[in-house]
Amino acid sequence: MKLIAVAACFVLMGPDLAVAHEVSPERLTPIVLAVRKARVSVVSIKGQKTVTQHSESGTTADASDVPRQVNGMGTGTIIDERGYILTNYHVVSDVRRIEVTLDDGRGVVADLVAYDAAADLAVIKIPASKPLTVIRLGTSADLMVGESVIALGNAFGYEQTVTRGVVSALGRDVQVSETQSYDHLIQTDASINPGNSGGPLVSPERVVLGINTLLIQEAQGIFNALSVLQLKQEIEKHVPGVKWK
Image 1 (spheres, one colour):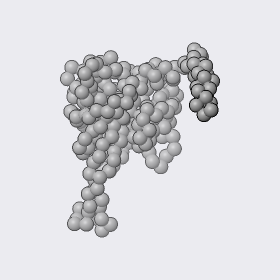
Image 2 (image 1 turned 135 degrees about the horizontal axis):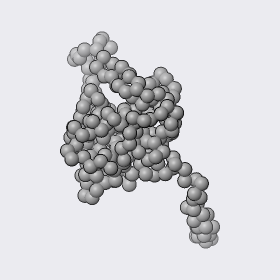
Image 3 (image 1 turned 90 degrees about the horizontal axis):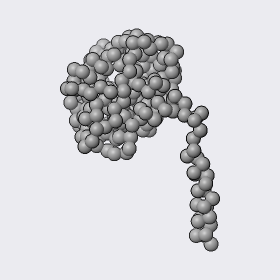
Image 4 (image 1 turned 90 degrees about the vertical axis):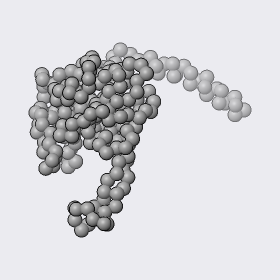
């Protein structure tokens, strides 16, 4: 009787599942289409790095300082069909083994091929037995405050998380520390979290406008991305013969 009941459940569910795959054109909004187009070029990045836990006596290293392993995570954006991926430098700095997960679930190990610590950008490369799908870079030169944007990334380890918002401001300069500052950022209220760094900020026209980089911990609804104008300059310096899409 149990087997019969189970079989009946599958018969009853079949038509419902078939109907669920029939999507009306009205539901295929520009946001939905942009996400479908972009996500195949977005990867998740994970890896371990060693950090030193300073003693309470001060910030300088001493015998009581103990190195410990921490798990890092971030996002990358495929920028060249040969396997070149753009991310933030802080995502991959000091990581011994850069583990990349593609949209189709494949896991590969990447090599760090170039970086600019001051710009907080890095290029990593994964093996590519066939050309990878590349996300198209747009322009942020004519971006307007109030335009819709979409952020994709590995938020808190939840791969392919999507958030949306608007451009809140343009040309923001943010001093993070004595040694790190960001210039000409795109400010948005599309939520990003730890793990989103390196993921694309996309327009409904299905092009990349920037790379999600900075969130302000104390604030609500203030997030930032490096503009695509900066990205192109850095990519051209570090990726030989880059094949723009």
